[in-house]
Image (cartoon, rainbow, N blue to C red; front, side, top):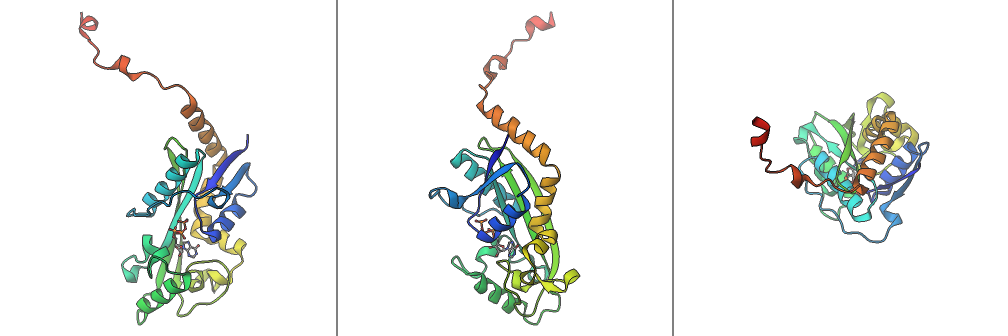
Length: 226
Ligand code: ITT
């Protein structure tokens, strides 16, 4: 049985990467761009986990289909974890990738500790609420200046020492092999048979009539004692 899964994102960079990793699996991948307008989710959670679940569960509920969301971002220890969950809007609500990069480089000016990590939490939710969660992380450094034209977001300033390049200088295949999103998705695809069984059971459960729990409430146990 082929399941349809909606990628709950409007970020085309994420859609391309996730489609590529899931292309050999028996799922039909759609994204929010394949549906009419649906309300925006407020990404006001304190953690990547909170926001990933919020986006996936909301989309699954609204569309009545399993939905998968990724919440991800850049974590810089020298900036006390910033931009973190605010990565997409670090330089303001309508900030473009270039604005966020410029702000990051300004904040990092003169700092010698240039360590950084991309983090990603993926949540796969069904319309009735339950969800599976996968986590990925990738360690690197903030480059002194942007370099490369691939990828999206902070890729031009995310220098990955094992390759001696920024993420924006890698092909999509190379990036997916080592990235935070690739790591989280690989965790999921490693047990994809279980994921599909879980999906089938949760969707069947939601269709089944609910048991009437009232018959088990306020029982009188006096007879059982005698
Ligand atoms: P959706 O919420 O619609 O998925 P978004 O771009 O708002 O799209 P997030 O809230 O997860 O996504 O914000 C993640 C931001 O972190 C993203 O906009 C980038 O600036 C940055 N980011 C995440 N993964 C990245 C990657 O692989 N390469 C570069 N930047 C990344």
